[in-house]
Image (cartoon, rainbow over all chains, first blue to last red; front, top):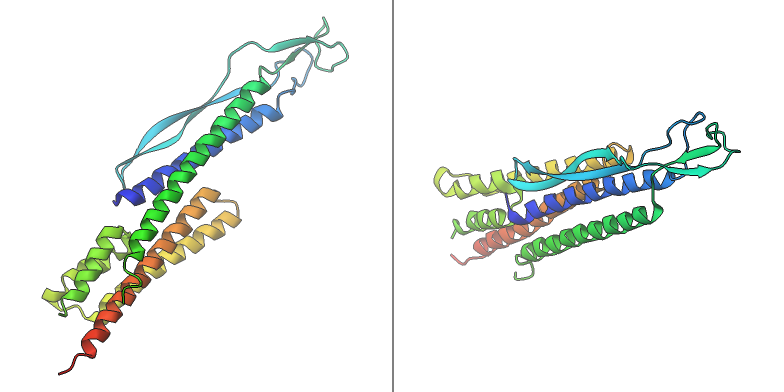
Length: 139
Length: 106
């Protein structure tokens, strides 16, 4: 397959991978204060995303895809809040192990990576268009 | 002189890598041997492009229904647009060459 067409495919896979990463960040952020359903139960567990490379047989290109969405095993944040429905008998509530700062940093990184892939796509499209335009205007 | 037209088609299709034109280009290159007519070449060219545009429209409908991601829809539409641009450029060039021949003084 044409190298420029292959670059388009690769960048497209990059866009999809980065958007799933952003989706996981959104889940973590939205559930940053989600407690367990019953007293003393475990709250929402932070999700992590890993990427893997994948050979596309049709083009021979190395695409990227989401390898696995795992969970963060770090301990939960415990706060003393006896009025909370999820508080255990000592009045402690387990909150998710989500750090908003980490999530914001991850979000910005996903954003930058998405922009970079988009830029590659734009450049590739410009090159293809310029090549096709060689045929025009010389009649 | 006639061999020039399929030659253009073949070189353009292979350099731009548009898969829809692949079939047309191959048969066009062979036309000097087995006698594929000029209209057949253009016909194959358009059929390939129409297929590509159809698949891009199917992708946009799937996108509206939420079955395909925005990236997939954009990718399909852009590839159809490229195929169309290539076909238009090749057609203009080929028709230009044909008219050149028909204007030739005998």
